Length: 92
Image (cartoon, rainbow, N blue to C red; front, side):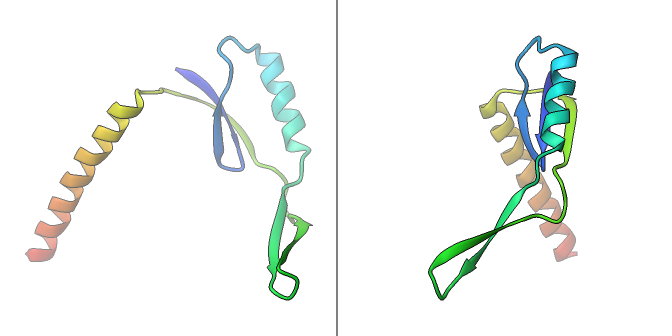
């Protein structure tokens, strides 16, 4: 199992053996950050940046990591089964 930190929905693996106090300190710091969003200005062909109305969402989880190719193969096989079942249900 691998500890991961999720920052506004993006997940990152934490270094193996990272001390719990360091994880807490990192998460505590990240929560203080405010995301910056952009809106495109067609008149100036540039972006205008502004602070988000919500702060940063930080979560620490433990996940089981698998080999990338194995995950891709499982995805393709399960999607094929899903499509076959969906098509059978629609045909019925």
